Length: 171
Image (cartoon, rainbow, N blue to C red; front, side):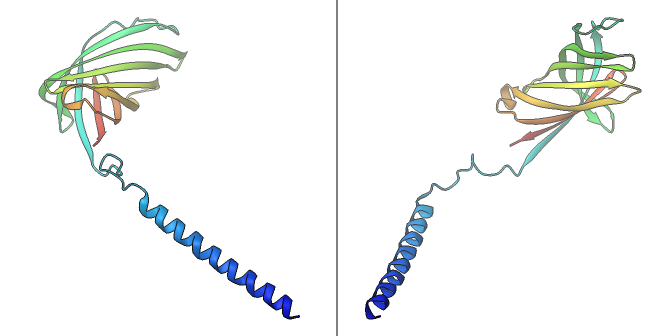
């Protein structure tokens, strides 16, 4: 009986010591972990650019077929209450029809918006079914100049010859 109590006491002491040792090891490991740097910190601030592109020319064929390619060139303006404001650059797009029905089509496009401060590159697949306006989300795939580390997405809305780009850049 005495021997059984001694074994139980030894088991309890060893269990408690193991728990304390594990807690101490975890505490020191957590303290040794590197602190997040500003680059790793969550992105709280978002810069929003609101621009309008007014189409000047395009080479889209009158009768589309899957695989058809075309380009679009536009003048780029600030958005002043839904109307073109100050001219800030130009916009170009290269698109391909990837799906086609009698109700509309889906276009895969790569766009470059050029300003004096730099360029922003966008990539998207937007469907154009039914009546205007059409639109969707576009990925910001890069940039140059002031926008060299551009990341984020753009809401693109097409209404006739005007395209609105509401670009949300993560800082």
